[in-house]
Picture 1 (tube, rainbow, N blue to C red):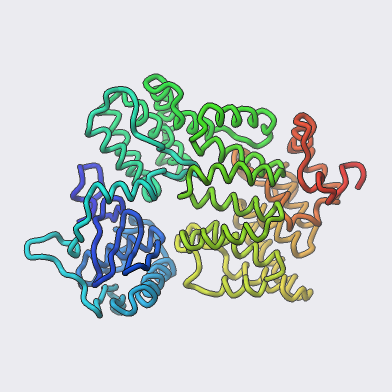
Picture 2 (tube, rainbow, N blue to C red):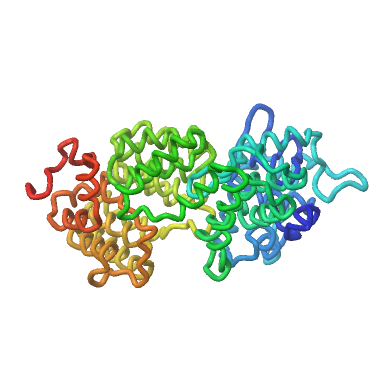
Length: 522
């Protein structure tokens, strides 16, 4: 089946989970749209990429699917390494062993591809039926309702995008249907959601809610895709936001799209009241809570951030990025057990999400359990699936080994590796500075921080992107060795944090709780 059967907006052959009907593999029921796999009273949620590949293999009904076909249908023809495909296949095999009890297997055909082999009987297609395995008789309204309940709030950096579909403008049924489809599909494929929303507002130009959702979809594209692919999107975003406000005054999505475009770096005093006002205006919309929570993280106010991010999570429990922020805030606030409970729950929902996985490794490593972190890093089947999320495994292992042994040789090797990585990848320099701190290389860490924030020395960024700079890592527990350094206080002053604390009458938690004295008393 696939996208080719849909309304002319989709790309033929690609696996779009929102549109794939449920199907059976023996007595296992697979729900692609919600990423759920059920057998009896047992249930698992798969990562999107894993579900896409499972669907692609099931479509072939025992035929061979080449690696190139998998890349085309599940990775949108992007350049993908063998490791990425192997990790996904490994996850499906683990599913077959764990939930399927061997009822199916994924067979590797050397130098050709893969095929799904039923060992307990895949329910085959009826004569003249569709090319997918037989779909169980699930009411379409129940299917859409379940998908909406689990995934209709599209996620962009932790923000729920489409809270509802009512509204003004006398929207055509076709436009509303496209709006619904976009809401379901956005977590998997923002580009396709964008196409649906563009068509929705073409059909119904006064559909304010669709204009608001379109504004956010433009914002997500601008943040996620290359500049060449999003040329002119800033202007379209502004147009969509204006139309949303015109036809649906107070539209929360349009407000969120415009706020998302605003840099918080250095503007904490200015933006905090804006975000709080947005919460008062849209108390049920998660975006303002997420924005305020992120700001409170960046100014080192961890318990305050926890409270706000819990409110955001309550309004959007399907966002892994939002969950990641809450986990980091709990850990930094000293609430280790709640942080670990959140991680365990998140790992069940998104077992190989890059940010969740990295946070699990970091929490283990920096709370005295580096050997457990080493075991997690060393398990290929547990590593993040997407190549863009795949960490530097060798560097991770060297860092963790140095933390565990604290031998001079291990520390030197780990520092050498993080220096090489930081030189190759500018976006890694803030993380490298914190790793250097954890390994006792305070001077190197401060040099890197001054390069990141001030463009000073050999660690200066060639393409400064202050819009996306964050400061919350400076206040995480493993940064503690920096807090008594005069150079560190100068960094805080230089980026404007001292000015924020003074103007708001607040303090970062590490000072408020007496973990360090104020500047000038170091």
